[in-house]
Length: 312
Image 1: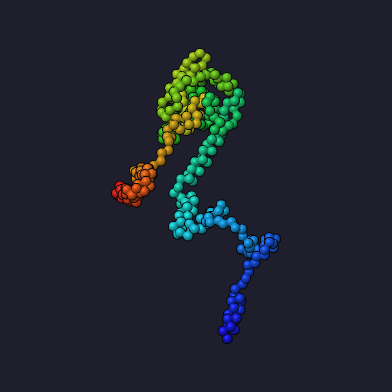
Image 2: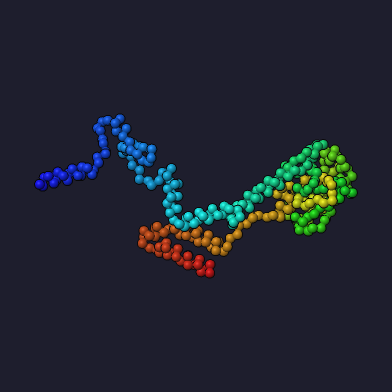
């Protein structure tokens, strides 16, 4: 009876255990054709090589596995939602959309049409192509220019400087008498060979000193002869100007100043503390080996306490 029961138990074990692993000696072709299903129709060799890899990631699995692990934390999902909301312009508190708007505005301004005197022709060009010493026909002031002549009597030119200094009343600018009398045609404008010597670009909107040297004569210049970038020409059909300052050299751009980052005293103190912690971490391993000196946690707790006191 005992031998019969042992035989039945062996038969049951043979039924439960499936011997699916097969190795045939000295027959690589047969062993290589053995495949196992990994996922759906993806099959791979059943017998693996003796190469082992204990790294958790490889070049292809690092990003998906890392994202999978990180998004198991609800806090990371929350911050992802905040980033998605910040991508909506109507509710975003970040300045990148205004930055893109500035780039579009700059391109539109730089591509505005203007007329630059080229020989006897006055072709259309963009504001971005204007530079000293071009002579331009001015429908609007696109650079700091010396007024040479206009269609008004005595070469007067009325300008509105509301975009510069906020004043809405009209101001007048006037060309020199000599240029008003001599530069009456486009041909005369094209042959104009005057030389302007003046102060370096600066931010003083209501001050300009220089002189025009032409035909062996010198004529003094002041702010009344200068058309500033940003002013609007009113009640004047056409006027011609010589570019003195262009681009970032203009007075209005000199007044823009540099953009400074705003930082609180707490941010400045935290920067100093990070530097101190980094410098303090260098001798710490040696102190620990010698068994002397307090631990890093002691310094960190002390600095955190100090920062909390300052923030209060």
